[in-house]
Length: 205
Image (cartoon, rainbow, N blue to C red; front, side, top):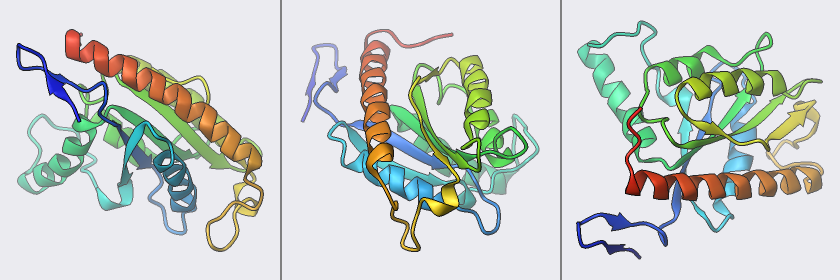
């Protein structure tokens, strides 16, 4: 439910925040969907969010950046661009490749600009001993350039392959669930605050 102001603007204070969960890995044999599906389900149980799931394997974007992409690329871009544009917040699920994050994720980021602006981004990472944390630190720099706000709190899975069973369930979920709630609460605060700010004063930088 929502109501309109006298000037026609929509008050979204009682509308769920639209959260886009982005699964960043597209490589063969990837573990990403297991982690991404888990955190997406955690987000669905959070009262603040209306959750959408974006698997980058379903959106093979062109690698050559262009102001005028080819016709077949335009349609593919339009599919994912529309989903990013309506989102109030993002949750990026990423592994760590060579101390950084996957190329398809950077490609998605670089094809867009205003879609990220004045919106919050949270992270869930996974990997070996580092748990993918170095990928997150690099992503903070990238999203800062795009005028997005990254949350302090994240969810990180160290030695991820031993933490989930064959059905994609966590073997011991207590610590991860606590971390997820902290991160999602913080993300909801930023998403609500920034959505209100954009409604009253469109972001123009």
